[in-house]
Length: 189
Image 1 (cartoon, rainbow, N blue to C red):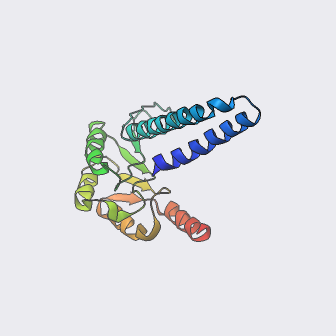
Image 2: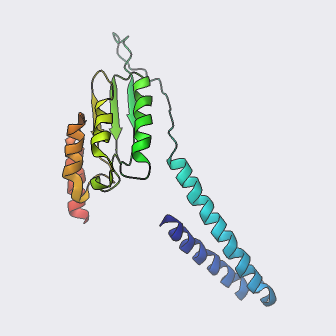
């Protein structure tokens, strides 16, 4: 779907540019057909390139580490917090990626794990194996637990199923944010 949206947008932009340039006689009339052909070929390759890059980049997991110093006089203990986002469970290969992501989390020996937004991909029922995904979440090893907040892809008609899934998975949902998201959906829709 994304490919078709990019194609439509790029074709419109290129056609407008070609039209304006032909009006001001920048493009000679005898070359107009060739310019249209090569511009459309370029648009097709450009759109395919952008979509391919997006698919590749969307399947990459990035680990970024920060050291944060707190201004507490007696605080010599380290707290290791792991924050993840955009799991998009129910999307292509999401459950395969989830297993490696959770192995990576556990290898860091976190004290707290935070999952911030877009846990699901719009519809709970798109998850192929919810029981396996739930078991994977329950296997997250952290000293103080796993916490989550919902994002713009978490909700809709299957919000209750999503919240039940998180509860079964030993993920504590920060419900204040959940209420705000529900209110936004009520007033926006």
